[in-house]
Structures are given as C-alpha cells and as structure tokens.
Length: 161
Ligand code: HEM
Image (cartoon, rainbow, N blue to C red; front, side):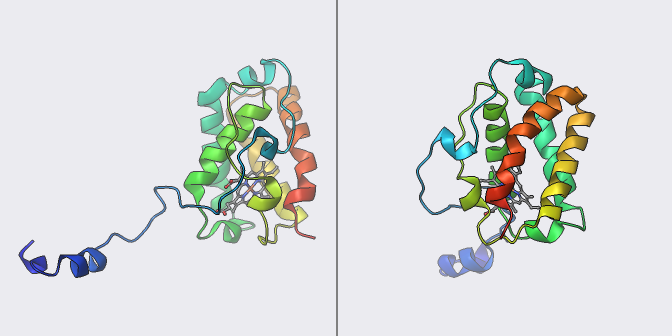
C-alpha cells in the first residue's frame, strides 16, 4: 500500500484489526489436569451417547453460550470475556464428565470464575439455558439429570461468597 511505504510498523499498528476474540487469549500459566473439571466422569457411555456425542455437545455448548450472552439477566458477566476459550473448554468439560473420550484442559472452576461475582440466581439462569439446550438436542430428562448432578456441586466454587 503506497500510503504505508516507509512507515510499515506505524501502519501495522494503525490498521490492525480491532480484536474480536476470534482466537483464544492467553491466560496465566496453570497446571492442566482432568481434576480441574471439578468432578469424576460418569461411568459408561450412556450419557455421552444421549448428548449425541461430540457433535451434540458442540451444539449444546454453542446454544448455551449464545443464549447466556444474550440474556439480559446475565449478559453483563460475559462482556469482554474469551468466549472462544469458554466454548472449547466447556465442550471438553462436558464431554469428559459425560464419560466421553475427552481431556479437560481448562482451569479449575474456582480459578475460571474468580472475581466474577456470579450469584446463585446467575448460576440458576445458566442451568436453565443448559436444560433448554439439552431439550433442543432431545436429550432424555433422566440423562440431563445425570449431567446436572455432576455440575450442581460446582456452585460452591463458582458463586461468589
Ligand atoms: C456448572 C456451571 C458452570 C460450568 C461447568 C462452567 C464452566 C466454565 C469453564 C470450563 C470455563 C473456562 C475455563 C478456562 O478458561 O480455563 C468458564 C469460564 C467462564 N464462565 Fe463458567 N461455568 C459455569 C457457570 C458459570 C456461570 C453461572 C456464569 C455466569 C453467569 C459463568 C460465566 C463464565 C465466564 C464469563 C467465563 C469466561 C472467563 C474468562 O474469560 O476469563 N459460568 N466456565
């Protein structure tokens, strides 16, 4: 570009695209472990299969995140957060907890939600969206409950005291 000749660094800065978080942002170093997922996985593949495997989990997580970020009750909590990383690690976490062939590479629930000020009512809204997303995926109610039983105790690490 003629305009940028000789001042390419300046131009690179001035014309750099505004970040839209399409790529994951770096996080402070932490030890990766499946134990960071916050619970032991469900035994067997029944729940993973009921979620319709990896493809179903992807649809459930996308729907859960899309609905959460546009729900005026909790939208504010998601502003300027790394939703690309959230979608990826949440997929891993649900797949792992459901007994699927996945490794969880994210942070602990306490670390991931530290200083976020999540309240019990926010937690319940998110669970409502998860239920709705599983309904949309036609996951039987009993299978939904098995996954939710793993997630519910995480309340104590996610909700601010
Ligand atoms: C059982 C319930 C929940 C689970 C399993 C869960 C899971 C996760 C996971 C896996 C991450 C990413 C971890 C990482 O970056 O290493 C995360 C981050 C996040 N969660 Fe949750 N979460 C839950 C509840 C909530 C609730 C109730 C809210 C707010 C209403 C919330 C808001 C967020 C936000 C905004 C991030 C992004 C943090 C960042 O960018 O630093 N989460 N959550």
